[in-house]
Length: 86
Image 1 (cartoon, rainbow, N blue to C red):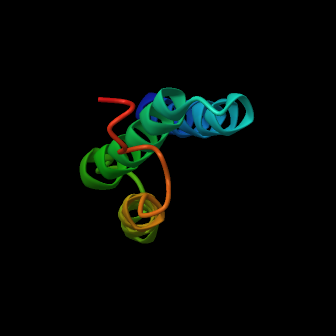
Image 2 (cartoon, helix red, strand yellow):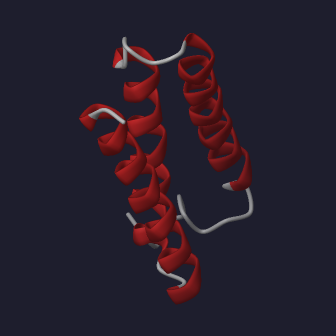
């Protein structure tokens, strides 16, 4: 496994860990940071990992888009973008 792929996997694991911690502690900022890190790392991996399989790169970009879409759609009733944070 290449170093770049390991960096992508560590970034995804860090994002998931921050999301879980944010949900568990009800900390909106930690949750938001986790939901920002994971798609950024997946987009980067999908666009710049030239040595990897094309199907895996497309899957990374698709998962990143799904995470972004789910985050945007779930914020309608959530407090992530409420005025209490800003």
